[in-house]
Length: 251
Length: 232
Image (cartoon, rainbow over all chains, first blue to last red; front, side, top):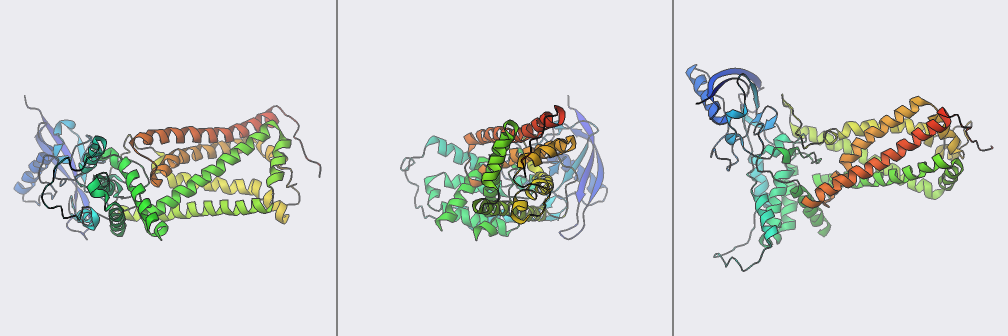
């Protein structure tokens, strides 16, 4: 039998980048515990529209945890209280009848609020554009065994590559540092021979862009990895530090 | 210069200066142990150090280490607060994998500095500086053991110093492995190893310091041993 719950929502509302935001409290009733968190917000917005009010603006796209578009800081956790999932994968069965849920946008100088719960994450695109790629003209696909890669390296590179760039690391970090994201993107290429060629230049360029955009200095609290929906490891940060220091000594 | 204008460079300065200070603490703790077993031996070590040219040079290097570590701490914290933005979260939860100390390094550091001021006034001022500039003629700068023992006959000082060591323990348990991580000497395997090594090393250092403080209090404050004093 379907179980339903009633909830009180404290939602951050902010007109635009410059406006001062504040919390608004809404009540939603009869939410199915089988629904996802974003579906619950859809129900809230339907209700607001019917009341003639402005719906709550929030980011979302694939709703299957791979695009990195959804965000939301739910009850003190990016992507909510469950671990290793994105907000769109969060189910309402994680909440109890009568709960008050506080929903905030990512709060960081690097990710300014555009409206309500939606933030501007183009800073991440700029960091990628600064060096998060290989600039080799590869031509046609070559034989898969032409360059042999140890299984452990391939696995680690794949784990680093699972970062979806959602920004939860910056949101969770008390320093607003983007090191987990940048380190994952540097690692996924530095671990493979094709990416190794430009490893030093990439580390320098991506860190320089990250600093320029006003992200904070990493103090190794580990909050980023604890909240990461893709469980990106802190060892990536050690690798980025190593790559960057090596690159600087090569200068 | 990458050690000032890149985030990782600034963190490297923090790490290296921090590890240098840990090295100093290790030496300081070892030297203190002598006092519990032989005040004469302790005075001999003090005599060997004193206000000689090489000790003064090392003191200058040490002071520079402290200075850099503290200045960078405030600089980094200022930048990090700015990076956090103007609006703070309404709900804050500390994740279970996140150490309390890692989020309070500046506060712990400030506690350590405040005690350091007291410590310098009690000992450095009356020993090395006194030997050099004769700032306090009532104290014999060569009789370190007498000065230290008489201070730790007071239980209030014992409690204060133990509190200081607790703050230091929290600061170093995060600082040690964090320094290794920042220098890049870390990976998935060494992550846990560095944490264990850091915790064990930090505990040895802090227990060593605390042992001397408590032992001196028991010997001269509780058991009432005669405090050996060097003839002027």
